[in-house]
Picture 1 (cartoon, rainbow, N blue to C red):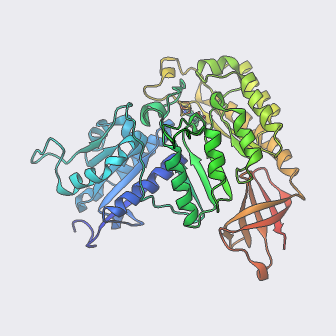
Picture 2 (cartoon, rainbow, N blue to C red):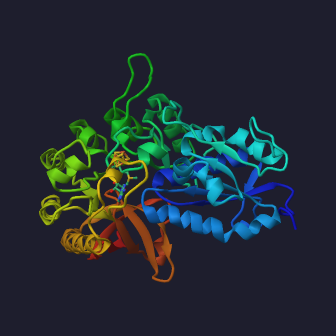
Picture 3 (tube, rainbow, N blue to C red):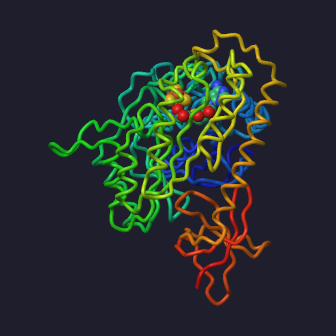
Amino acid sequence: MTMSADPQKTFYLETFGCQMNVHDSEKVIGTLVHEGYRQVETVEQADLILYNTCSIRDKAEQKVFHRLADYKKLLAQGKKFGVLGCVAQQEGEKIFERAPYVSLVCGSASYRNLPQMLIQLETGKQAGKPEAGKPLRVTGLDDRETDECFETEFTARTNPHRGYITIIEGCDKFCAYCVVPFTRGKERSRTSDSVLAEARQMADLGYTEIQLLGQNVNSYKDPAGKPGGKKTFAELLAAVGEVPGIRRVRFTTSHPRDFGRDIIDAIDAVPALCDHVHLPVQSGSNRVLNAMQRLYTREQYLERIAWMKAAKRDISITSDMIVGFPGETEEDFADTLSLLDKVGYDSVFTFKYSPRPNTPSLALEDAIPDEEKARRLEVLMTRQKEIQIIRYKKYIGAISEVMVEGKNEARGQWIGRTSQNKTLNFTAPNSSAPKVGTYVSVRATVSFPNSLLGEMVV
Ligand code: SAM
Ligand code: SF4
């Protein structure tokens, strides 16, 4: 058999990595559907198999190459393969050497060119080099300098109640360990007018929750607005929160260097802005922060935390931390642990340092053995778990509004999410079973390290 028997062109897309990738995939799906393709659930049904890849840590890209190797046998069935996203941008044409059956390699800064690339794939013609007998190779690898964002009206959002909006793409911070500035291009913001138009369109479609996305959302710089109407990030946040019909606005990720007090003022002033800030710190040691080129000190970071704690609303704070960065001593690590105690996070994503191609820290010796990184990670996670047990306990008895996200039939519990981004599952009498996507009040009765359980208030 060659290709699927389906008269319509079909594609299968698998996504690895962060929320930015998940949302990019929604835009890619929308674009492909607009170009006449139909999304299918299995590789067997698909003519075109796409991987939207992540390269933030070493294992992420290995996973992609393993997956590609698994599917090599499908080449004989006439299927075509494409690698999208960060591994595509990072490895570029080397992917064709490692996996010669791949026909398309496209980084995120080139997605706007996907329709033309699809035509090249279908006609079997490569731009500029239509050589007979050679494998088909279509590439979309932009240099870092593109000014364009991937704006499309065809985004295929999977959830009908809450959805992402990208406000800023790329990154210019160049933290010593991070591959993102090399894989996602330079920092470029969308206009506030275009973001607000998308928010209003989503509200019209019935969405009530919007999450503004970017590697550093708060580095947002409005390239243009109505005359005299360029918005700061805090102003844009407030404006999205004031769109009629929108009940919750989240934003991720924020960079501590660009985190202004005006963001907290906006959260205090606009009820739709969620009381949750994700503010990655990476390390509690000034020496390590400096080596990481993070552009702030522990003291400056704690000043921002103090603003949050002084807010009128109870703002939940979460973070990212890396252990085992080159040269991290026991003393540096102790500073990270003491920061955990000082801030009182509701959740922390913890990572072992992983050397990445092109990054400045690649020149530093990765001298901390993996077992030691694993030990520090374990100590960090254990300490954070103890903190969360105490923090979550204090919500017992409290009533919170949750968005109903689904039902766990096996447990007979509804799945709810609070404005603080906490999972608050709950029971409800059959007579007043809530609908997914609605908002209900729940009293928490039991706490766990990562979630709460409660009863719907009827
Ligand atoms: N822009 C965000 C910031 O500045 O905090 C982070 C974006 S990055 C996609 C998500 C997280 O991955 C980072 O906060 C960091 O903790 C982790 N990370 C990035 N590069 C890493 C590396 N080389 N090794 C381990 N963790 C890494
Ligand atoms: Fe990576 Fe730093 Fe940019 Fe975040 S700010 S994406 S960690 S380079």
